[in-house]
Image 1 (tube, rainbow, N blue to C red):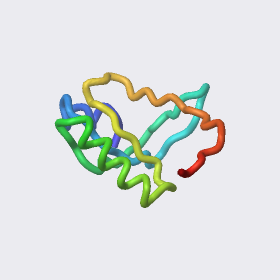
Image 2 (cartoon, rainbow, N blue to C red):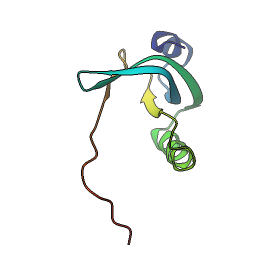
Image 3 (cartoon, rainbow, N blue to C red):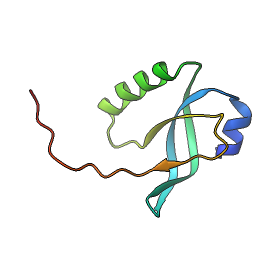
Length: 86
């Protein structure tokens, strides 16, 4: 689906989606096609499912976003440093 179609279908909702077709440009992630996984009223519920799915399936490109935003703006972030457990 395209972002405009998702916005029309799920007005003012939080969505968890997978980027099906995407590329990087100027530090931004441009998503051309997506698959909506779930729809939420509450941001925290969406983030909770995102965390659960991401832990199990790290290779999938998953995002949480609110459809009240006209543009789908995803800034790429470089992770610097080493995680230390414990």
